Image 1 (cartoon, rainbow, N blue to C red):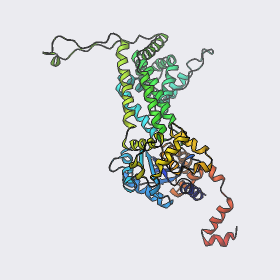
Image 2: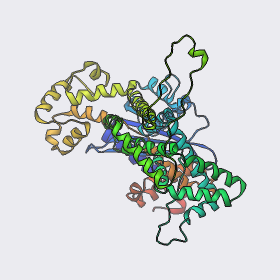
Image 3: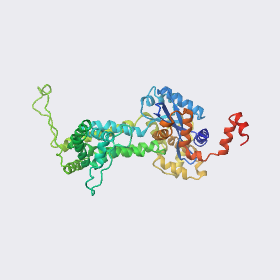
Image 4: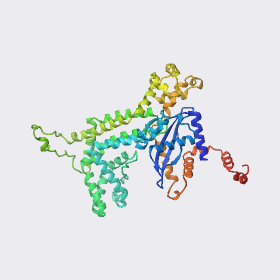
Length: 505
């Protein structure tokens, strides 16, 4: 049944799309074996984009050369010509994205037209990870939040104490649960910060009570966290991180779909940059500062202090005149500078990640469709395009108008077949833009199915059985359309012994 599903997918790719893109990501199963999920992205006759899992492949080495050989062998076994490969999307690990020995570089040696796109969802996680350390008070606040979530998960007594902090007062609702900031997940930071800020008085009360009543180790951890979280600097760091994390996580959510295009990802990156730059405003930070002060007043804590002024070292002060080092007039001014530095770092990283060489080539290709620019070097590079594209584009623009790749996809999808056949080269160009995956989320989601299938109670199954179960589980809709009669006949024809047992089915 699994082989029939995969054959159906490959037939759809070869007959409907011809060109396709590859998505690959890896994880370890319950036994610690490295499993690589291989997915294909293609466009059907109605110009709908599909991302389908082709299977799980166990690898013994994780080098770029080994991964590229595995992908080439997979394409050969599934009868997907590598000459039709036009895009590849992986995460940013060096064995996959390496410029010389990475998997994408090895694939390009065989197929230079396979443009590499760094997974957009992974990129947003890297942007957050690189931007936050530029502000010490925000970084320390999130570190304290991580320690609080770890204490909440590891200590059942503290968890019970926190959730039942209002047992004596039935009119006050119980606080919501807390969670740590997972360093690998994409969308857990905003929820974790928001949960702590919404229940800040209860968190402080539970920590203070735990420091007095629990065991020595837990009590010392609770006392240390209470001291950190009761400071105005930590609370301001949580408030300052909230809009930054929310903006980038919204960007991340927009990329987690099988129909997301690279051009759409680049446009979303521009919108995210503008959203981040809009936060770089004095009155918006002042509002955050005032909210933090109100929360401090509600919790009966000290106001946010201005950091101690540092003296200039003597080795730097000698012979430099009588000028003193700069001192901020208020705590708001001091922390605003660090807050703006985080925004600047995030914007800089977005521009750096989304201006790679292959993305530049993709933008050149999309500009041919969106602006009608004649670029002979682009047309001659792809065998499916020819010189008649320019003429068809000129005629096409006289009849239809659009501003994005999605607009032109809808235009072609709504055309009658007779009109659509008038622009075969424009449709071929549109298909090239649609087959480029923007993220590896389809491969990531297959790992959830892997955890459901290969558990501690089912850990000794063979790789072949695991792969077949994965395909049947992930492609349940396709599996339901298969003919049981055809499957039974194929099973009987596989061996002569079965023919004698079952006869004609």
